[in-house]
Length: 320
Image 1: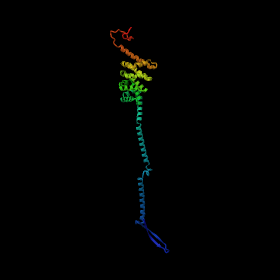
Image 2 (image 1 turned 90 degrees about the vertical axis):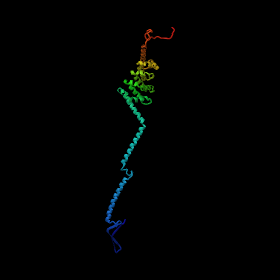
Image 3 (image 1 turned 180 degrees about the vertical axis):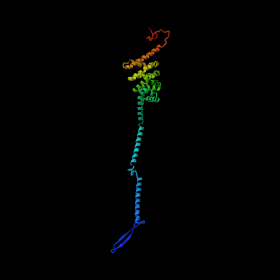
Image 4 (image 1 turned 45 degrees about the vertical axis):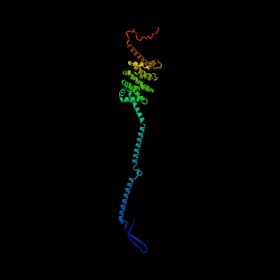
């Protein structure tokens, strides 16, 4: 880029000279000084706009590192969302791993609630008549390896405390099967709740004959011989309840261990007083029914009359 100036050169006598500019010049583009001023101002404005556009483009096309200061909030928001998602994922994984533990705890809470509810008389009949509740309780009570089966046996025992439930429960073979299995359990608490339930069921007059079976009577006899007082008392009480029914006398006397157990308890000095009294009462009741059956028999007219019992010994062709 070159400029050409115009003016007058004056030479002096001493060999020197001077140049006087006339105020105009021209450049390679053919612009005057005034035009150059306009051109210079235009170029300045153009450069300013170019620099502004460059800064705008630089801002738009800048890398995340260049815009970090202006986008800090955006990155913080993204980081928080990622952290929440990671926490939710960890909790979900933890829940899946501990699902069985959570289920066991919820079952324990539900069973505890039902146990408390069945201890009230007004609730016992309502809950026992609820088919779904009763079926679930029987389901767990039958699983002797389940940790809640003892509490379910307790709930079943609470059901039998309400007299109106006994006829319904005694008519269910599954209930009798569960109570029989519970009475044979190695856990003393299982046996106690089962025998108490059987005792309450045997108090129902309409159920006594059906409950006087060989397997159930043998179980009661075995439990009556145990050392635990509460279990022994419940077993002897159940035998006493069955002894009050004439239709149960034959099964009671046909079961080998029943009469022998009652005689042992009635005469043993180690038997608690309350248990001994019930055992004696049971034997007296059985004897009364047997005497009633004997007196009701028909004696042939050809036989001489004699009051019973005769206390006479008999034999075959004895020598005097």
